[in-house]
Length: 185
Image (cartoon, rainbow, N blue to C red):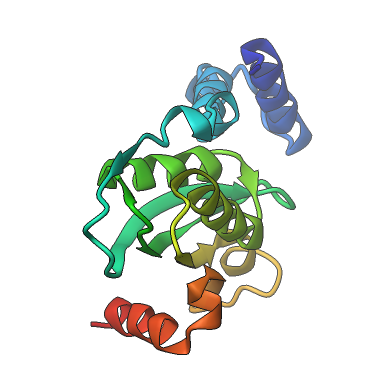
């Protein structure tokens, strides 16, 4: 459970730590704003993926379904710096489908936690396999990491792409190729 007072205190300590005066006019409400922002940015800890994964029977549809370009925003667990991008999901049904908004909600639950992109990709894919029980699932995540662009190596055009292929997406090359081709169309 989030603790607003600790988040506010952490923001005050950060301001003091960088040599700022938290009582200066422009910073008077900053610690409160930061606490509220972090409550929002990490709200995924309070959500259970099982609560949103309501499936529907659809035994007649057995073709590839792709949900591309789901925007996400997260923070890396190494520097607490933002990273963001898009998640692309494909699955081959096995008698059930999932409401399209549920994929975006699943992404949101995991992105709104301290993350690394590799784990984010894995968690999304594994939960789709667990709750939807498709013949296969593919998840591709593209990310822009401010910990790499705004500090350290400062490479402004660097991006990261991760993928997880499960079930038939792993064992049937044509299915994986069709999914990846559709992402580039």
